[in-house]
Image (cartoon, rainbow, N blue to C red; front, side):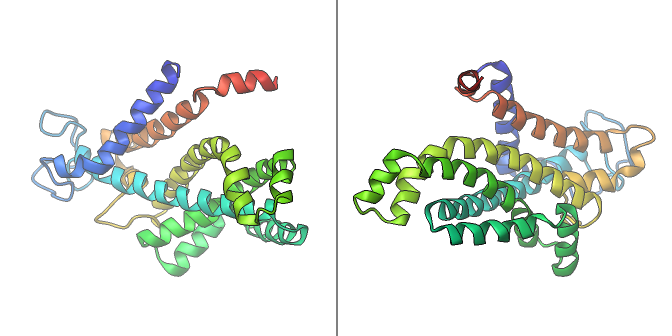
Length: 268
């Protein structure tokens, strides 16, 4: 892996560790308003300044990492897991099952993602499980289409035909013949889908339909501190940079995965 890929991996691991252990290591609680001024500048006491209620922004961002990274990761795993499973089933089954699954996924795709998210969250609330289910449901079609296009090509290979000839069943072919040969591209797609989910959740939170106060993800922090925009205060710049750094890190990692350049060179 070259240095941009290593840089992306380092930033991603940093945010993952922050989400896992950061809140327990903080000396300040992100919910304590204290006596600090509103939208205070960076100082020795408040490294990233304070928010619209005088709370420490560094503590708020560290706490927000748990929601942003955690919800996005669970939703991405849900979307990729269900999408890949349905794609394997479609590729290894009779044509009518493939057609039925594909048309059903196309129906879900016909609804704009942002509109579907707004409808679901407005109807069922913005609890954490609902946000995970909503984001996962929206990105199942993308994972399904990519996995199916790969699985259909693998299903036509001679070794899959040999497996069927010797009497192997559908589930064996899905698990042992097709899945191992599409796992690497699907892991790369999982990374891209993680970025999409992060941006979707940030959009919902900015509209007030994401994580609800007193908890907050990074999108909520941007919305809450919109009053610091005229002065470009750290209260609004810091969470925006956190979102940017996470998405850029994942893209750098995916674009520089070991062996990707060799595969692309072979294709060209």
